[in-house]
Image 1: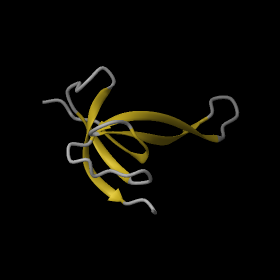
Image 2: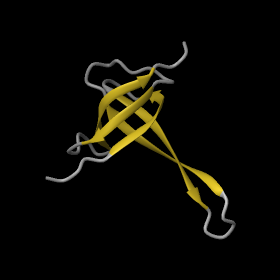
Image 3: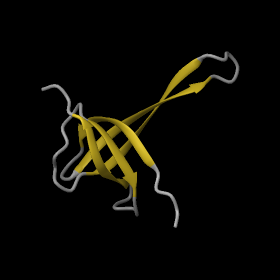
Length: 83
């Protein structure tokens, strides 16, 4: 059995019905300047119950492709955003 990848990020957009756009931030060392820099990537996450709001911090787990660009399911909501 293969290990399912987990990502943690912040919801930046409600992208249609049962979908949210999640921004994942990671810190990497710059190869030349040896300084820590931030790298960003957005993933589409499937939200079956439509419970996510912009600003929520979430954990998503990799799954089979649900659409052309969506391959992650919502696992848990870590923290809710400020309204």
